[in-house]
Length: 273
Image (tube, rainbow, N blue to C red; front, side):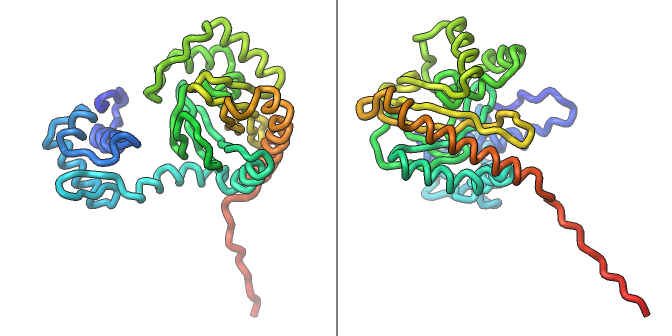
C-alpha cells in the first residue's frame, strides 16, 4: 500500500500509518501483527512500531497479542463530515424521510470511482449488504453514485471511471460502457437515478442530488428498499417525490450554512475618559 507518493514532501511514515488503520474492516476486526504486516505490505518490525505508536495515540488497542481499532478512529472520519456541516443538517431530514417511507435513507459522496457514505438512517430490514458511515461501494453500481457521476464533465467522468474501485466488490456486468454513458446523460436531464439490483441481489434504490450554495452537486441522497418487498413503481411513485423534496430541503439548508460567517471577530469596546 505505502510507497505510492511521488511528491518531494510525501511523508512515507504517515502513509504507512494510515495503511495500517485501513487494514481493519468488518471482516478483520482483530488482527495479529503478522496479519497487519501482510495486509499493509510492511515488514513485521515496521508494522509493530506503527501499531505501538497508534496504540499510544489511542487509535489501536491490543488484547492477548491481537490488535483492534478503538472508537477514537471515528474522530478522523467525523471531523470531515462535521467540517462539511452535512450530518447536522441532513440528520433530521433523513429521519423524517425514513419515518414517512419506512425505508432506509443515506447520503454519500464521490471518492474516486467509489461512493462513500457520510450519513445514514436505517430501518431493521434484511438487505444483502451492510451499510455504515464510511462504507464504500462502486459508484456506477449505485443510484447515489450514478447521480454523482452524471454531474461530472466528460473529461472528469472518464478520469474517474478509469480509477479502479477500492470497494472489493465484483463489477456489474449487465451494462456496457456506452449504456452507462447514455444512462448518465438521462439522469443529468431528469435529476434522479435508479439502481435496480445492480449492487447486489435484492437491493433496489433511488437517489437525488444534494447541492451546495453554488448549485454544484456535492452529495447524493437515496431511499433503499428490498426488491422482493417494494416494486420499482412504488419506489418511483411513492418514495421518489418525498426524496426529491427532502434533498431539496437539505440543499437549501446547506447553502445557508455555507453562507454564514464561520469566523467570529471579537468586537472591541473602546472607552473614553
